[in-house]
Image (cartoon, rainbow, N blue to C red; front, side, top):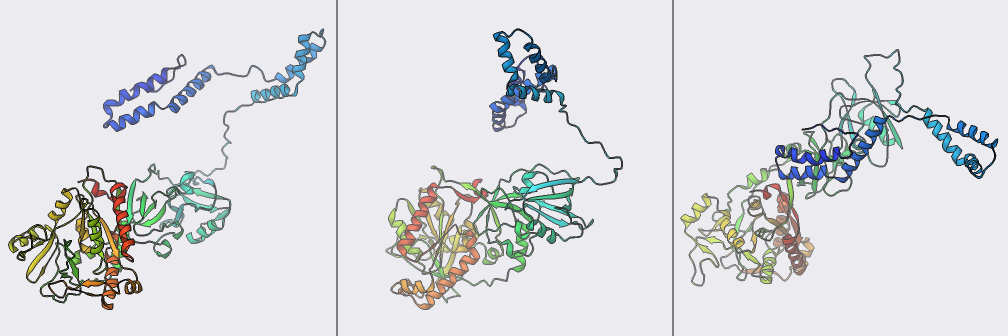
Length: 576
């Protein structure tokens, strides 16, 4: 490839070279995207303007222009004096008038000053008594505004020196480009820091106003160029740096809530990542605990969870019964032990910290996302689901459960249930074909993965009503589930709004409706709390069913948004 050079005889030399570069580089470029970038870069107007300026400067540098004289003002005075002894013609009068004007005299004076001055840089002489062993010291002056400096310091374990531990991406120190990780801090505003603790130095910085002057010994390590982070994560827990005793600098910490989207700016430190809230105009990053560090802390403080068996509740709902619910109230433990393809203990052992996410928007030809509804018994989940189905039976659909019990005379296979043999059901269980299943009165009941696929294949939104710990196994590229938690209101509101309502009893095979009891209300609140505390990180939306009509409107609006707007989803859902 020819080297860049500028010829003094032609203004188009570099232009031609820039135009030819992409074609010459094409055999060495892997992708069309890179080639397009090269064409755009070398065709940029601002680059061509810079090249033109470069060529002009190069041309005049070769001419090496020098002032013809540096006494123009004195020469003008001499000329005026000589002209006054001559016969005063109109031309001489005009010239004398010009030479006497203050602005022309000032112009000539400035010309002489510039012509006499040498503008080449002049370095001060090296001192004779310099110590060759002495470390080079850099003086840095930064103007402090209301924002923090954006750097943390520590005492080096081996040398005892105060050094810069990290530079926060986007902070004042980072933007200045003058302070680097590993730099040794000697003075702050003229105050030596050798004998001070890092906390005392931070206090000095906090009390400083206006400009801050640092005396540092630069680090010998070369830093790699910083690239802005393009990794996004969803926080699965709440975090307040002011309550974190382990964080190296509370002021540098970044607080967030469960569900917040964070942009990771740096993972250089294995313990403390740098991040900022997605969409935040402030470029400064803050410290958050790394995934590995937070998982370790959660694992150490997590109490043992007592797993209680969940029971089948044979509830029906006016012809729209398509999935079974489970109730802790059923005492027939010998016949109704709930099972799943992975145990509760496996699920609760997983520690939610962060989940890498990316933006996703459903395209017209894509299948609808699976919608999973979760909530405690009696919260009104089935009523909300029924209202959705009635609103548009062509758009919404539900799964048909499998069972091994005999078909009754008024039932049709594939409508109320899909009736299969016990042997086939058990084979499907072994092959992990069920989302959830259980046994009731010596018969199996279950919701299969194929029943979900069947609804989605009809270009319908599948409404699935399952236990929350099955959600984890549905979070796949195929289903891309959107999980909605239907939450009960306060205990007082439950007593007020459900005083005339009834709950489907699980005590007999007929599904008898009975009035809510105080025990039902308390169980509903307790169950909702357990669900939210253990599985809340899997919920995309929480709707409080205080009033059925209001909750339905919120649910319907969520469905409408889900089909048209962009959402953050796990990155694994974007690739099969």
